[in-house]
Image 1: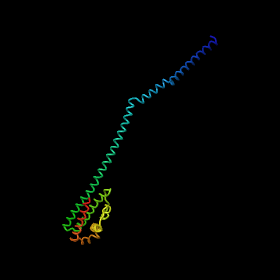
Image 2: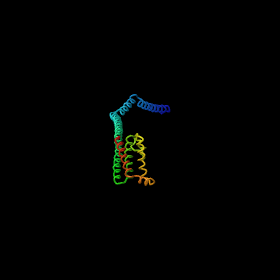
Image 3: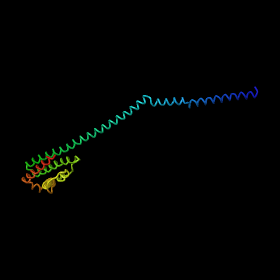
Image 4: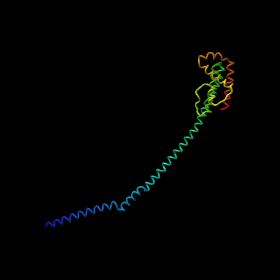
Length: 217
């Protein structure tokens, strides 16, 4: 074989290899960018996104969220309503507590008077008025906890009660029964001043005042 023939043969082989390489590139290019291939890929993605299973799952999630929202707001409404009911009952319970304990103190006042314990009868008479006034305080105020004081006039004012001058003087006098019975500096003098007549007169007024407040409840 001559040199010229050998060159021609090599040339043909190289040409064939080049043609095969070109065809391979063209085939790959067509497979990647053909409209049919892209369309099939889009359809496949579309089906995966909107398949019945995916659609029902999305619908279920949406309905579940709506149901949770409804349950939440209904529960919140019931909670608010229940609080209002409990608030009324609770306030009435506080009022009834003060009324009941004031009536018990009124009975105890009578018992102490009958046994000759005049100073303690007046001391407990003060407690009876204090508690009935605190019942009125709770009734006429938003809070259920009355002011922490034994001053009958102050409780009456905060309970939005109005009295005549005579009643104001009486409330101040009964407030002193509480102070004079508790503190040693006043206790002996108060004890000596609590005669039967003095005690009986004040017990009568305490009862009248008590009934006057009780009727306003």
